[in-house]
Image 1: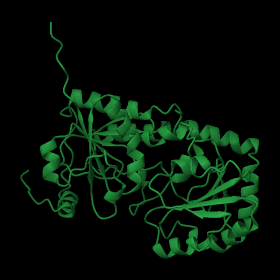
Image 2: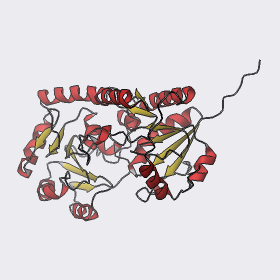
Image 3: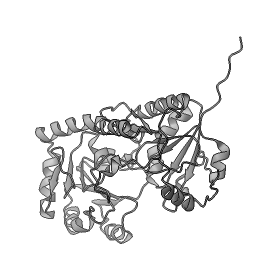
Image 4: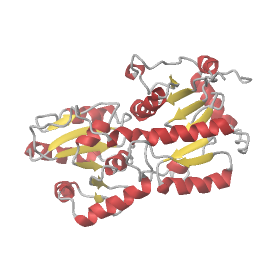
Length: 359
C-alpha cells in the first residue's frame, strides 16, 4: 500500500519590531528541521526588512499572505488582524515585567480578542491565562516555554561580547524606552563615572524605541571599558553579562533565566529576586553585592525562575509547534466567537492599507 505524503504546513511570522527576528528564529529552525515552510510578514515602519536573511522569504502584501494560505500565524506582539488566515498564536515579545496599561491592568494579561492560542512561558503566566480562558472562552492556552530563549540555553562559542583575555566582570546595562520607566537619563552621569574606573567591562543596549537623543548620549561614553551595542539579537549579550543593571524592562527576566543577578533602578514592582535601588549613588555597591552572588538572593532567583520559565532544555519551539499543530488539527469552531471590535480591526486594516471589508 502506497504511503500518502503529508502536505507541508505553512507558518507565517507576523512581526512589527526588529527584536522579533531573533525571537522567532529558533521557531523557524524547528519548522525547517521537519521540512515545513515559513514566510515573514512585516507590519508598519518600526520593523526593518534589512534584518531578513537571504533564505527568509517575505510576503509583501495581505493579498500575498491570503494567497499563500498559512496554517498558523505566530505573533510576538499584541495584535494581529482577523483577515490574516490561519490559527492565530500569541508567543509574546517578553516576560511579564509588571507594566500597567492605561486601563490600570497588567498589560501582559490584556485580552485583545485576536488570538486562538496563547503559548505561555511558565506557571506565573499560565495560571492567569487559564483563568482568562475560562472567562472569555475565545482562546485556549498551552504552557510551552518561550522559543526566544532556546538559544540562551545553548553555548555560543563565537560570542563576540565574551573576551577570553579580559577577566573583568561584565555589567550589562539595559533600559526600557518608556519615559515614565526608563532610568537611562537619570543614571547617565553615574555610569560615566563607573565606566571610567575600569574595574568592570560595560555593555549597553537599549530597547529599539529608545529616544534617539538618549542613544546618542550613551554612544559618547564608549571607551575601552564600555561598548554601546545596537542589535536585533540580545541573546549573546545576555550570555556575556555577569550582572545586569536595568529598570522595568522585561529583558531583565530573560537575564534572570540564566540564574544571574539583576540590579534594578526604581523597578515598578520590585521583589526579592531583584536588588532594587532608588539612588544613583547606590549603583556601585548594589552591583558589587550582586556580583558576590549572596545565597539568599540566588535562592530567590531560582524560586522565581521556576515560576516564570521552569524549562531550560532549549526545546520550547518544539512544544509551541506541537500545541499549534494540535489546534490546527482540532480546528477553532469549538471556541466561542470573538467580539467584533470593529474600531480596532478598522485601524489595523487602515494601517496595512487593506480596506477590502468583505474579504
